[in-house]
Every structure is written in C-alpha cells, then in structure tokens.
Image 1 (tube, rainbow, N blue to C red):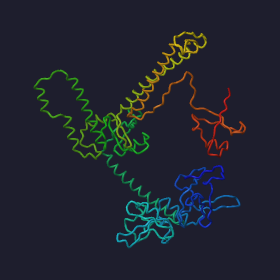
Image 2: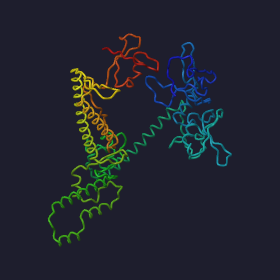
Image 3: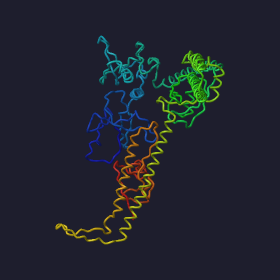
Image 4: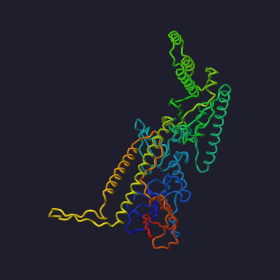
Length: 525
C-alpha cells in the first residue's frame, strides 16, 4: 500500500501518525500494526527514488531498517533507515535473498526467521528469512517470535550437505559478505566465473572445430512462427544449437528459440531430421510429377516389374533413418542427393515454444479480414448515402412548409384528423428510415459474428463504427489552466478521452496536488 501526498483533512483517520522514539517508527493511528516504511521490493525510480509504503510492523532489532525513521524538527524532514549498520545489513540480506550468516559470522542476533523440529522432536533448527523461504516447501517451518537471538544453521561449518541455504552451488559458510569483505568476495567469484566460462568456450570451440572438418553447413530460410512467408532470414548453420542461436538473433525473438517446424508442421530436433525431411519432400514432389506425366495406361508386365522392385524413396529413407536421431551428422546420406538437397535453402518456422501455425493461416486470415472489411465498407457507404438522402428529404419537407389537411371522421371522440403538413414524415422518409435501421442491424450482426471468430493468427482488429458525413480526428488538443487562474499560465494536453490526459503531467505543470481533478470546458459559439 503506497503513501501519497494529499490535502490535509481534519477528520482523515488515515492521515494521523504516532511517532515512537524507542522503536523509531511511525504507526498509523487507525491501525497501530501498520507503520511507515520504504519499499525495497520495487525498482528504484531515478527521479523519485524508492516509494514510501505502509506495511506491517516488524518488532525485531535487526531486519527492519526500512521502518526506522528520524524526525528532524529544525528542518521538518524525515530521515529514512535511521538504524545501526548491522540492522541495515540484515535488512538488505533479507530483501536480496542472501543468508544472514554470510553477513555476520558466528554471532547470535535478533532477526526474523523460521524453525523446525527434528524427527524425534528434541532438537530445534533455526533458519534465517532467506533460507527459510527457500526450504518452506520441504519442511514444516514455523515463524520465530521476536526476541529470540540465533545464527542461521546454513552458515555453520557443521551443517549438513543438503542445507546449502538460498545458494545452489556455493556454500554459505565459505561466503563472507560483511562490509569489509563484500567487494573482495564479489571480485573473487566474478574472476572464478570468468575462468569457468573461458574453459567452457575453449572446450566448445575445440569440439566444434573437430566437428566442422567433416560437417557440412545447411542453408536455411527461417521465418517467425505465425508470420507466414514474410520477413524470412537466410541462415547458414552447421549444428542445431547454432541454428537456434542465429534464429533468435536474426528474427528478433523476445525469448530464445526452442522449437523448429517445417511447412507441414513436422517438428525438427536435429539438422539431420531437417535434411531427411527435405529429402523425403523432394521424393514426394518427384513422385507426384511422375504420376501426372504417366497418365497413359500401363501394361500388366510393367506393373508387375515395378511392384517387385523396391521403392527407391523407401529404400533411401530406411537406410538413412538407421542413424541416431539426436545427431547432427549428415554421414550416410548419398553425396549426390545431399548436394541436390543443400543446393536450395530449406524453409523452417521458428517459435519460442508456441504450437505450430500453418504458413497459409496468416494469408487466409488476412483474406477473410479483407473480405469482411470490403463488405462492411459497402454497407457503411450505403448507410452514409441513405443518411444523406434522409437529410435532404427532411430539408425539402421543412423548406416547403406545406399546410396540413383537416380530414373529417365519424368518431365522436376525434371528429377531425390532421394529415400531412411539413411536420409529418412522408412515406418515402418512413420507408427509407426502415431500410436504414435494417441495414444498421445487419451491420451489427456482421460485427458481432466477426468478434466471435477466433482467427488462427492474432491479427490487429480495428473497431469499425458507422462514419458520419463529417469526421474529426480522434486525438484532441486542449488548453488547460487552473480554475480561477490566468489562461496564460495554462498548458497544452493531448488525448482521445479525458482518462488519457495524464494527471501527473497536469500536476507537474499547473500544480494540482489533489487526487480529484475536475475538468470544465469553455464552449465558444
């Protein structure tokens, strides 16, 4: 719950605070369990710093430095984090998810934490806040009450191997993050991490260098899944991980590429799978072309001979699929066939884990959307024409000023009926109005049906509204100044609606500090 500056109210229960000098905290009068604190969970704003919030009071000597304040009466200002260095270190460690025993060594202090009993119920093990949160699902932890000083078990040298604390690899007992040793510890682990990365890169380079001597590169045209055949990128890769890396960079994916599909939706896991699919696809195309050419009747003997011979495509496929499916090696494939396949780039579609979307789905969706747009445009054009005709008929009727006709009736209640005249609509206007309403109902039905259709591609839909004869831009520019002030002190603001006009922008320029802002419009005829 953030704290904001508002106008002072004498009856505001949420604007009154009590300052306790012993705990150096500001308690809310309406709820003393809530205190004023500095938020350490949100990202710091470069202009405003960290926001001030209201949170539950933590009655610990250490671990709640963000709730400690000092009021300077001479300048009427508040100083945050008015506490000891140890309290600040423990607070920072808790919010950073670091074990507090790496900040303090072999010292029992009062701090937030958890505890759990051994299976026999005789020994109590205490954990700090970070270690307890990392192990909360494994053991039945209970929160410690204030006033119990302890040292986290993860930082002791006699800890069990499975009690590593919040770290996955590094042992808490070997890490020293105290004030005088934190920089040195950070430099040591950064250098150690850099050396491990260098060793990994050296091994990967040597392994890829050995593989590159006999591994052929494959030319590929990569498309983003869901974009159809648009914005394809030519990629040359020798291994499947290299292909995924290049696709992520060249296609500008938000996340790392993880799935590769062919045009028929076949998932690809290795370059060998991709080449085999392209080989199978070429055989299928060749067979279909041969069937078209051989449309003439064939003799019985030729049919028997062809049935006795094994299909060359199946023969090659059976021979090639004997290789491991997890290998990128292209060994075992006929060199002449491989040359033909690798001559042209192979089209693939890359995704970050999303299911496959057919390449022609985007074209179908765009075609359907275009048809709907053309249909609605014709209806909207007819509506504009009919409305214009309606205005002309009404104008002619009013301009004519024809008098009404008094028609006698036999009814004693209403002996005379007024018919016609310039105030009554003509039959042509009535029929035209009925046709306009029927067309508007038809247009609303089309829009409702269009909204229910789930297109395979998340295309951009723009709401279509019946356009008037004279249209104006959606975004308006207004001149805004303080009510009662001078117009020269105002400023411009832009927006499609009142909610789009930024209140923060207005507060910055015309000093409106109240949370409720009312707008008054001056209309000049």
